[in-house]
Length: 85
Image 1 (cartoon, one colour):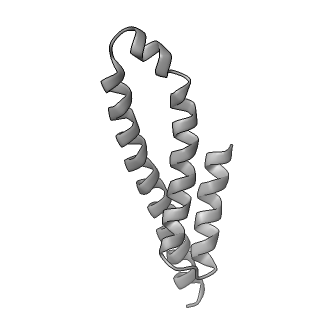
Image 2 (cartoon, helix red, strand yellow):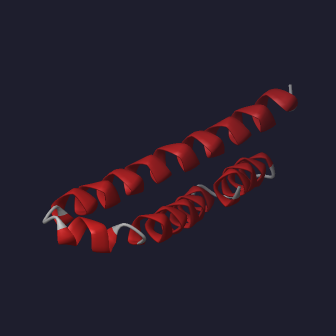
C-alpha cells in the first residue's frame, strides 16, 4: 500500500508542476520500501551462500523504483499538459 501511495503522490506532484527531482524522491521511497522487505531474507540467503543474489535484487529494485517513479511522473506531466488544452 505504501508503494502505491508513493507512486500516486509522484504522479500528483508532476500534475501540480513539481520539478523532475520529485521523481527521484518517489524512487527513493519505493527503493527503501523494497530494501526493508529484502532484509527479511538476508539471513536465509547467507545461510545457503547465495548472498550475491540478494545484491542483484537490490540493483533490480533500484532500477524498478526509478522506472515506476519516472513513469508516474511522466503520466502526471502528460495529464497536466493535456488538461490545459
